[in-house]
Image 1 (tube, rainbow, N blue to C red):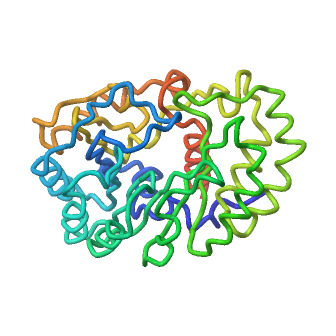
Image 2 (spheres, helix red, strand yellow; image 1 turned 90 degrees about the vertical axis):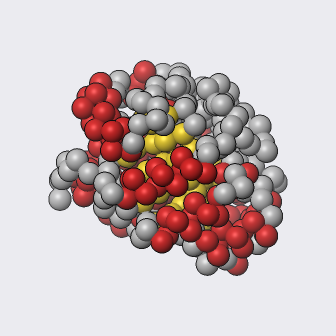
Image 3 (cartoon, rainbow, N blue to C red; image 1 turned 30 degrees about the horizontal axis):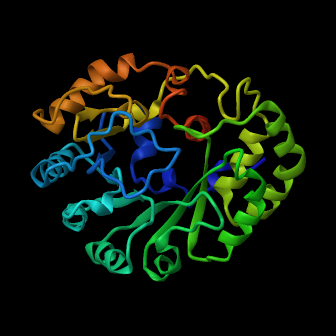
Length: 325
């Protein structure tokens, strides 16, 4: 058994103040996710774009939202898209966030140049989450991003067409000593789901090798393989067993995009918007706490859409461990 309190490199552990908001049930905003653009220069099967606008958020809206969120105690901001590096004002958004004392990270497909990477570093970004699903199709940035003074996380979706190469993938990525950790993602979007036979095959043929490679190097991978993959009882594919707790992230997180505000990352792409951008962050947060957070459906109703059940599982275990301390 891996003690999750020792997983110090993970995304959750870097979001200053987020644990306190969850474990002590404070009503303060600790994390803001801003989907600054719906445009993307890739077309990944895992991405759910059915409710995308394919537009950028305006510079004025993004800067206003950042500043208003800081007045509510914000500590951490996460930029996403689409592909956030396609927004021409992205470096400015990072600079403003850092000037306001925020921790800043982003999710990216990694298809950007070293010139763009240097702009992000100069602006002050703290870490990036890079999607990398196939060992022979590395993102463009992987060869130079490790030389930059930022933390690097790899998001890797494990699906039927790539799961046999997972041990090789972990060994390959481990050569990049600058990569902080890997977050395993379940099949989602239009990606093919696992069958029960494939899950059994993974557990008997691959799991132990992956666990052994990840142990001590990628603790989040080791924990997930040990506690989630090994113990799944999914009826229709890996990570798809129904669970009955609500999304705890709504206690600390607000999300903003071209369509408006919501408390829950996993609801956003399905169009469950709490209020439009004509509201202030304070108005959106109050509405989220009083209306949205109280009525967020349990995770099972989201699992066929854009949510990532595996992340929910991991976050839930972290929260439960913290509550028991």
